Image (cartoon, rainbow, N blue to C red; front, top):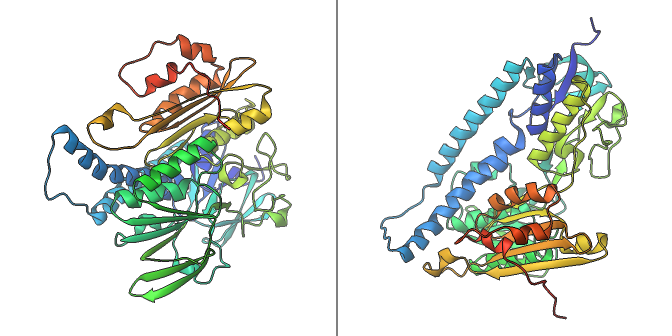
Length: 457
């Protein structure tokens, strides 16, 4: 018999926390899980999944317009925001129920409560007003949207937490940010019929991606009518009444809108969890510092997912959670491998990428070969759409290993998921060249690029 109530207690029932808890329970551990919002976490409840539904919705209007070039015609076409929100909410409720059932079926006990550490083995369940104890504790509280509270009127804007529950669809939207969330929602709102302005402090959007990807997406946003203002920030948000806002920018410009959306980043959700008080070391941004086994500075406390600010992606959190459970509760030591993780931006057009950017590769390898193509897909020859597709392959010039693939264009995320397998396995450029093309497809360009790209200075 143990002196603790649980062998494992997990704070946070998002993707990483749920996976770790389910596996640990299956391996015989007595598991407790605390979640103060909804089981499923950001990804399922107010992140990747509902966002992708909005992305799909935003694409149908474009498809209807494109279909005219193929002989289709339609009249009385309209869009109902409330119907979309209700359908989305129904599916999120279903997924939330599945997550709850899976945890319970594995034998884990769910506590609908905020949880705060009192010491290295004691957790206070705020909503229940009681303590529980655990031999091992896992922090999987994820991240939360960040707002620049130094900006007067900052509270007049919303974040990705609220955007999925808007009562009415906005007519004019101004978005602060230039990363994943900002770019994706700019395309969503535009695709559903709003006027959109994106304001970003940097020189160009998607700054952590390959520079060609950034430039291509920026051009495509402008081409579809999204106003992009770079090297500027919000300095004030005014309430004009009747739901109208006025955003003043650092460059002196002002923008009126009925929706202001903060998408300037996320921070690890560690505030108020009692981590510092029990000796868990945190980074300057509040992230939990962990070693390669996801162990914190307190040897029985671990952390996985966005709260660690390593690679903030749902599949990474899931794998981190699985590796933790295998190591600690199944005598099967595993570590997460962070090399060649595929990423996507569900913009219009979408982005798919795996491996090093050209800049990163040139810093890492003595010789780098670049292959690049930019073309208009066959589909658009009849639609009149000028959207272009970019494909770029980065190669270690000494070993011929493909160390980066970057695509901007229709179905890019689907292509990159398959390509990530090959890149992870060490595929050579010669293997691409030896592969017969599948015609007619956009993806055939990946195996027909032969000429090395030479930059013109």
